[in-house]
Image (tube, rainbow, N blue to C red; front, side, top):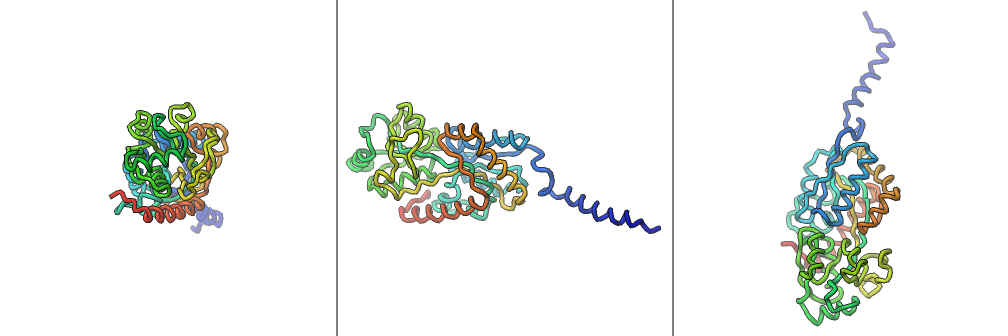
Length: 324
């Protein structure tokens, strides 16, 4: 007996439905917990932004977002782990631009392709940074600081979140442009570097987490490191205003995934982040960390990454900076 024409008509529809259900890219996403790898140790800017992002994403997406710190080696350990993850949208990382724009230029075998080895998902924020010194250092202004450093070559030291971090490279660029020498003391993250500054174990640093400490008088701020002055400290001029415009100050935090993530999944995550960045509560809490909301689409983030990789690479080669 031949099947009816109605039965035949239903077969293609059934096949299409089964194909749709079988496709992970088109299935309901998300439907289980998400693993958010944070490429930093606890307490620093990247960690705080990552945990805040996970909290708000969980509310918007309706699933648990589990933050997992994988600090060390300035995020390259976490980055290598992400390149090996399944590209289904259930594992991605919170990362800063140093992982992609700096580390590949100073490490001979970083273990990943900084541009094509990841799926660029969405940019979340940009960092405000400040050059701060210990209160016992006998300087009140950036000009006095530079003069003091030149009068005591190699005697000052500075802390950073690690070799090849954005903070490390910024100080090296300032040293080169201002013409003074200082000893780099790398730490495993921003938090211990700032704690060392508070104790007087190091003399200065450039960081985001020093901003509230300058506000309450526990450290002294000398220069805003960015295109504009900090809203929290409007009386402190920028490096450019004080004669040092050549210090590259780009610093952002973004979500990056394994290579080959489905476009539908990427766009879903980016859409939730875009909406999240309009929430007053999220913006206010970002401000407490010292960063500002900065949405960049997947395509825009890729463009930014390529440009940062090019510019930081040129500066690192000119300065002869290496992690080896």
